Image (cartoon, rainbow, N blue to C red):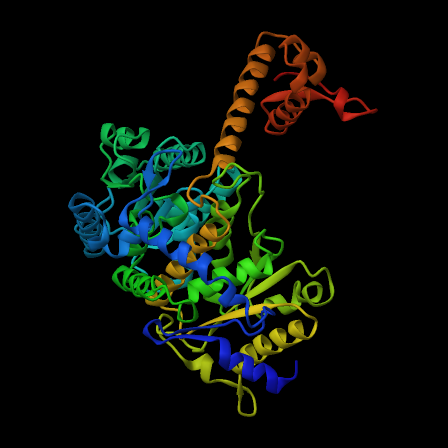
Length: 533
């Protein structure tokens, strides 16, 4: 297809959404002209299903739960007045609490104003807040954000080292719906220990975001934490960014959360309409369906040409992959669905993996994110955007050139792509992008007949991890009794010969952390003899 034909195709299939300052270009996806008309019936059913979801239908039948993240930015659409009131009341509490922190009404235990924020969570309780904090943060932030988002001791030590002496002036927000998530619990214990070592009362500077009556809720109440905010069972972790999970850290940082909510609400209004050609979320879902044959046969590479959107691909990994990665469809058929997501940023991609994208295995499609503006009101300066690096040419011109050049080079090699174009990176735009992808995921899930709102695979992994920890306890008890042996000998003594490899890995970890002794022979590490230190 020559350039003139591509221009015609661009004009034909460009989706313009002026109400949210967004366009979606699908012209470089090689679907046939009759593809969209052929899917109208399926999309009609998908739109109807999404309308039922927003009206309060039980979407997560495994747990008899509604799925109501759409109500978070439009509380009046909630199915009951009680839910509407809970959303609006919580939002007001978040704003009031953040203002009190910013004004110094709420202070650190030493009487000084709070300067830093430590967010402890994992998965949806960290990925969304991290994405928003990085995308919208400025040197003028009221509180500087830090994250414990794993149970890695070294990772937590690095974060604490970054906070340094400011720990005494750090507010900690612990986020866990169930309150029993081990990674988050471990991070909370590490933070408590660090505060204690610094002579700071943790409870007076700790806030919980959790489900009512959860283990964390009881802990916060019994220990007299500063504040508790709710997480509702009708909000899943990967769609919780516009609940207290994401709004509280953002508000404390100083980000305009009303603008984020407005962006999402405006995007919902556009993407709720059952008008395929004027609905960017519907077109995105159809492109996913087309390019992957309805089976997720191709990966999605997310390439935002703006540094502030670097973490978008990490955020989308959970939203897309946890929602769509399912073994069975709603009818119980084994379908092994999903779309793998990865990404970087432009033009770093040009010096990282575009070589393979252009000439290697063609197992992907690209979603470019183009941001029209070079400068940002967030940075408070436009000097770099106006700097000419060549005569009449700025760094931003190069960035745009690399985007267009990469897109063209990939298309010439039969690599398909679509482009989302937004005006800027602002709170409203971030809300728009969050809502856009949430709706696309929901619509696509309906097209392939899977439940996007449960995650049995995640629960299976948690159970398996729990079994490993339980076995570790038995291994340690065995060694504490004064006995020693190889992994095979210890596993046999514990009646766990079928878990010998697990025992071996547990012992190696314990030895590396100095908690057991290892006598390694020359011939093979599997013959290492372990004993208590």
